[in-house]
Image 1 (cartoon, rainbow, N blue to C red):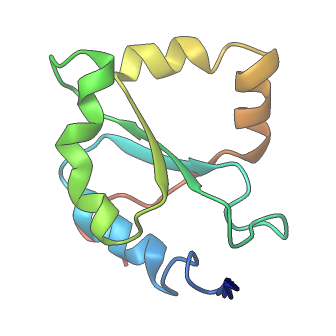
Image 2: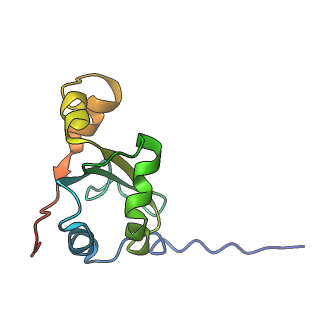
Length: 117
Protein backbone atom coordinates (compact mmCIF):
# COMPACT_ATOMS: atom_id res chain seq x y z
CA UNK A 1 0.00 0.00 0.00
CA UNK A 2 1.29 3.41 -0.95
CA UNK A 3 0.34 6.68 0.63
CA UNK A 4 0.85 10.21 -0.52
CA UNK A 5 1.11 12.82 2.19
CA UNK A 6 0.67 16.35 1.03
CA UNK A 7 2.10 19.00 3.32
CA UNK A 8 0.55 22.39 2.68
CA UNK A 9 2.94 25.05 3.98
CA UNK A 10 0.12 27.61 4.07
CA UNK A 11 -2.28 25.45 6.09
CA UNK A 12 -0.79 26.52 9.42
CA UNK A 13 -0.24 30.15 8.48
CA UNK A 14 -2.32 32.71 10.35
CA UNK A 15 -4.58 34.95 8.28
CA UNK A 16 -3.01 38.20 7.02
CA UNK A 17 -5.10 40.24 9.48
CA UNK A 18 -4.33 37.93 12.42
CA UNK A 19 -3.11 40.67 14.77
CA UNK A 20 -6.08 42.90 13.97
CA UNK A 21 -8.49 40.02 14.64
CA UNK A 22 -6.79 39.28 17.97
CA UNK A 23 -6.98 42.92 18.98
CA UNK A 24 -10.67 43.12 18.20
CA UNK A 25 -11.42 39.95 20.15
CA UNK A 26 -9.34 41.06 23.14
CA UNK A 27 -10.48 44.69 23.38
CA UNK A 28 -11.93 45.41 26.83
CA UNK A 29 -11.09 41.87 28.00
CA UNK A 30 -7.38 42.10 28.85
CA UNK A 31 -5.02 44.67 30.26
CA UNK A 32 -2.29 43.74 27.77
CA UNK A 33 -1.40 41.15 25.15
CA UNK A 34 1.97 40.10 23.77
CA UNK A 35 3.30 37.77 21.10
CA UNK A 36 6.72 36.20 21.50
CA UNK A 37 8.79 33.50 19.90
CA UNK A 38 9.07 32.97 16.17
CA UNK A 39 5.84 34.67 15.03
CA UNK A 40 6.69 37.64 12.85
CA UNK A 41 10.27 36.47 12.28
CA UNK A 42 11.93 34.56 9.44
CA UNK A 43 12.00 31.50 11.73
CA UNK A 44 8.19 31.24 11.71
CA UNK A 45 7.25 28.27 9.57
CA UNK A 46 4.38 25.94 8.74
CA UNK A 47 4.91 23.90 11.91
CA UNK A 48 5.26 26.90 14.24
CA UNK A 49 2.73 27.85 16.85
CA UNK A 50 1.92 31.40 17.90
CA UNK A 51 3.07 32.16 21.42
CA UNK A 52 0.71 34.56 23.17
CA UNK A 53 0.78 36.11 26.64
CA UNK A 54 -2.40 37.72 27.93
CA UNK A 55 -2.63 39.84 31.05
CA UNK A 56 -6.02 39.76 32.74
CA UNK A 57 -7.60 40.11 36.14
CA UNK A 58 -9.29 36.86 37.11
CA UNK A 59 -9.80 34.61 40.10
CA UNK A 60 -9.31 31.44 38.05
CA UNK A 61 -6.30 29.20 38.66
CA UNK A 62 -3.47 29.54 36.13
CA UNK A 63 -4.29 26.32 34.25
CA UNK A 64 -7.95 27.33 33.73
CA UNK A 65 -7.38 30.90 32.54
CA UNK A 66 -6.98 30.12 28.80
CA UNK A 67 -10.59 28.90 28.80
CA UNK A 68 -11.64 32.54 29.12
CA UNK A 69 -10.15 33.16 25.68
CA UNK A 70 -10.92 29.97 23.77
CA UNK A 71 -12.60 32.08 21.07
CA UNK A 72 -9.10 33.11 19.93
CA UNK A 73 -8.61 29.62 18.50
CA UNK A 74 -11.19 30.53 15.84
CA UNK A 75 -8.71 33.05 14.46
CA UNK A 76 -5.88 30.51 14.42
CA UNK A 77 -5.98 27.05 16.01
CA UNK A 78 -2.28 26.77 16.80
CA UNK A 79 -1.94 29.34 19.60
CA UNK A 80 0.09 28.58 22.70
CA UNK A 81 -1.55 30.86 25.26
CA UNK A 82 -0.32 31.89 28.71
CA UNK A 83 -2.64 34.04 30.85
CA UNK A 84 -1.11 35.91 33.77
CA UNK A 85 -2.33 38.32 36.39
CA UNK A 86 -0.64 41.74 36.10
CA UNK A 87 1.43 41.13 39.24
CA UNK A 88 2.51 37.68 38.05
CA UNK A 89 3.80 38.93 34.71
CA UNK A 90 5.57 41.86 36.35
CA UNK A 91 7.46 39.43 38.59
CA UNK A 92 8.25 36.99 35.78
CA UNK A 93 9.60 39.70 33.48
CA UNK A 94 12.27 40.45 36.06
CA UNK A 95 13.74 36.99 35.39
CA UNK A 96 16.81 37.07 33.15
CA UNK A 97 17.51 33.37 32.72
CA UNK A 98 16.15 30.45 30.76
CA UNK A 99 12.64 30.67 29.39
CA UNK A 100 12.02 34.28 30.43
CA UNK A 101 15.26 35.53 28.90
CA UNK A 102 14.11 33.99 25.63
CA UNK A 103 10.61 35.44 25.97
CA UNK A 104 11.90 38.95 26.63
CA UNK A 105 14.18 38.85 23.60
CA UNK A 106 11.21 38.46 21.23
CA UNK A 107 8.32 40.00 23.23
CA UNK A 108 6.12 42.39 21.26
CA UNK A 109 3.10 44.13 22.78
CA UNK A 110 -0.11 44.14 20.77
CA UNK A 111 -2.11 47.38 20.47
CA UNK A 112 -5.04 46.29 22.63
CA UNK A 113 -7.41 49.20 23.07
CA UNK A 114 -11.16 49.67 22.88
CA UNK A 115 -10.54 50.07 19.17
CA UNK A 116 -7.31 48.58 17.87
CA UNK A 117 -6.88 50.11 14.47
